[in-house]
Each structure stands twice: as C-alpha cells, then as structure tokens.
Length: 149
Image: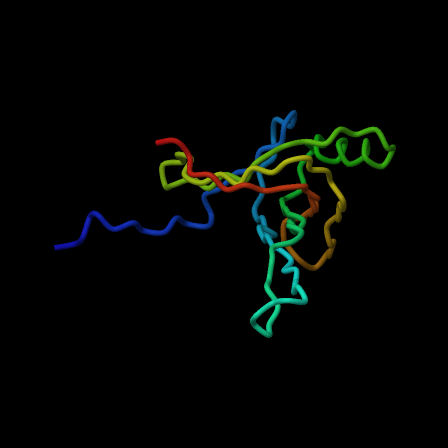
C-alpha cells in the first residue's frame, strides 16, 4: 500500500514570476536562485587555538535570468527602456512555485530589482524555434517563504 503521508517534491514547470506594476509576465525558464555568504577569517593575537575563526560576511544574491517567448506585450521592455534613460523605479517581485492545481507552495520574494540586461532572440530562417528573449534582473535580497495553506 502506498505511503500517502510522504512529501513528494514539486515539479519545476509549475511556476510564475510577479513584478510590482507589471500585469503580464509568463516565462518558460528562470535561473539564478543562488545565494552566498562570504566567510571572513578572524584571529586575535591571544587566541589559545592556532587557527582562525570564520565569521559570516557580505551576503550576495545572483542575478535572476528569465527567458520567455517574445510577444507583442512590451511592458518589460518599457521598464528596461526607463532604466536606460535613468528614471526607472526599482521593483519588488517574486518567483512562485505551485503544485499541480496551481496553488502557491513556495515563494522567493526579491527586493529592489531592476533589469540589468535584455537579450533579444537568435533568429534563424532555417529553424522553427520560438523566438526567445532573456532579461537579467539584478536584486538586493531574496527571501524564501512557504505559501499559506
């Protein structure tokens, strides 16, 4: 008899991305949920043990790379264009992982994001691939939370 109390992992294809003030932004791929803390080595002159202690230092959050098929919706490009002109506001947002019924399960919320890079599609007349654009979002901080049940 199967164990119905086990916690099966979520599928990586059930997700969405949210940006404050952007109404449509479906993506096919997101990467860059990488966080690091730099170690700081420290030792005082009267330490009894002959080794350094390691303290935590600066926290770093990798840029998020988001890929999607190009559509006539230019909301994200207009945001990037504002950044090019020097007047865009920073936006908060989230990457939300959902279950098979599209109920929110995990949320990676990011703060003070802006588009640091916009990459257009590779175009090839001998291919039938979808034209893909990529944006790279620079963020100050990312926090993971379990969605309310």
